[in-house]
Amino acid sequence: MLTSARFRSVLGHFPSGVVAITGRDAKGGPAGMAVSSFTSVSLDPPLVAFLPGKTSSTFPVIARRGTFCVNVLAVGQEDLCQALAVPGADKFAGVDWHPGPHGDPVLDGVVAWIGCTIEAMHDAGDHRIVIGRVDDLAAGTAAEPLLFFRRRYHHLAAA
Image (cartoon, rainbow, N blue to C red; front, side, top):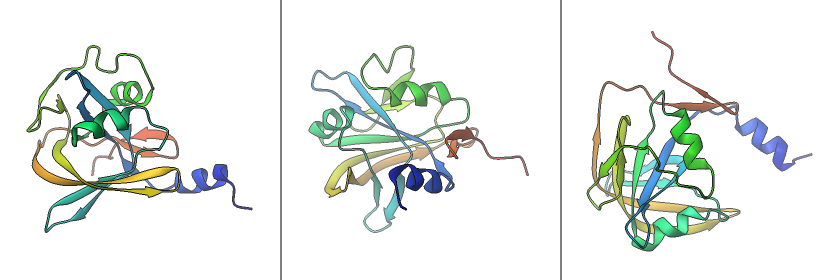
């Protein structure tokens, strides 16, 4: 029988990267959420997508401004990821960041960042598919990406 628990368990066997989607609230303060459902969509035009849950209280705050920044989290940023995954509280307490191209937070120490404008949103079950047009981006070379697999954080093994 297909249950949501079984679905989650089996799909947890697919490793994914972990990103922080950041933006600004109505007063200009930082807002953010952790997401493991992120992908590139198109090269021409450059598009990416992420899938926030419909129950997210953070995504509507980010969506109001129409822009967001994807921050590819690095090994060692597990605590930051967990802080961004919890609703409420001051998610940015003690977090170092600087404004990206739209003023959205670019978190210090990330593997890469991608500044986007919301291009489209689609309903998809209990989630939304958010398509972002890439306006600017950059990557560092020193940090290794944080991975999520079987409900735990992982990192790439040295070759």
